[in-house]
Length: 245
Image (cartoon, rainbow, N blue to C red; front, side):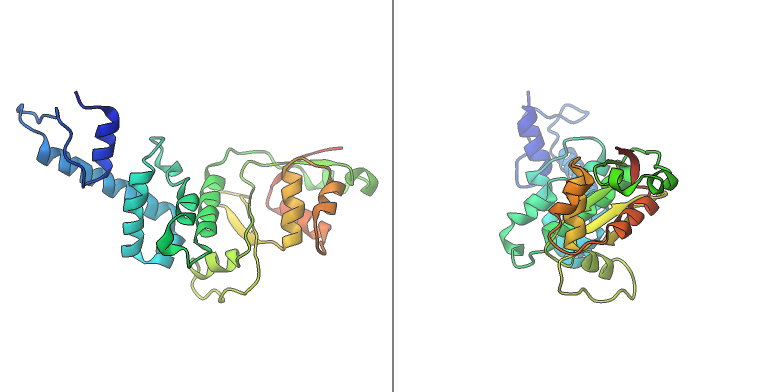
């Protein structure tokens, strides 16, 4: 009987021989049928990666991306039947992929696309009424902790990440600036909305996401920060679900 590990390895790698013990419907060897099945699986997984990483696909070109996908799917077969989750190891895979080391922002592009996908599929949460935030005295707000919607995502990067993503996603978008651009992702309605953050805003938000008090999160920011603007953006994005004072 064919071992599951042997079967999976042969299924994802056309260089592997057809596992022993596989028969077709007539009792003969399953060579041709297995090859067709193997090709269909590879095509389906490659298409899932194309759908999940459209900007990465555009940056590399379809041919190069499909070659990369073939290597990736052999190294990282699906761990779940839900293809919307496939590709979670792509950033780490790119970081260790020598032929693309000269394009340093590719792993962060993959992280951003995964975060957008995760935001889209995240559970719904009721946003906090903006009036509740406005009614909290400043001295009380400073020691408060914020709770966030599952759809809120933060991707930190030393690259102009938002500009690179937008330039390859939207017609007529401006060319990327040569500045670091962490990305905030909110989902006020149905589709996630990426937006750039300053480094100080990202530092503050990262601390808030870890559950620290607002005043401590402000202290974590190493540059100028307009807290009112940041909180307003989070409220408009329906990203804040509660405040613990």
